[in-house]
Image (cartoon, rainbow, N blue to C red):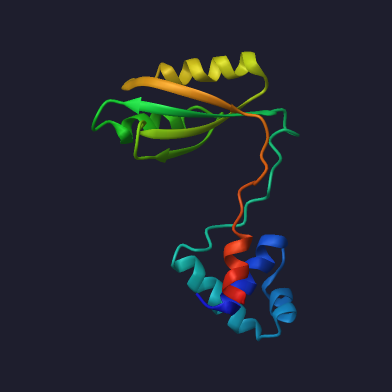
Length: 152
């Protein structure tokens, strides 16, 4: 990746609905250059899609929690597959340290979170969980600082 790739990704991060022609105009390069770079970034797995940014709280899921799961050895794929079936599970990361998986989940309120946690605990091969409720998100998910550093 070079500075032009980073500038293109910054533009698409800010305005994901921009077309190739408008991107080329704003970046001051040929349309074919933008298209070729987007194709290359997609082929390399850097650019994986253009999903809309959604506010889960506005959708009724105002509570975010993180659970560290200890699971039976060798069962990560099985547990992850079952967690994928729980709609409120937003992310699952394999980790090192005390736990085996870090799960980000959302819920409507505390009672709803208890229901979600019960579903997670009921997954076969989950041995132990430790859950923390997020009180706020002072630094939301971001890539902008990394891209901006590449432009400099």
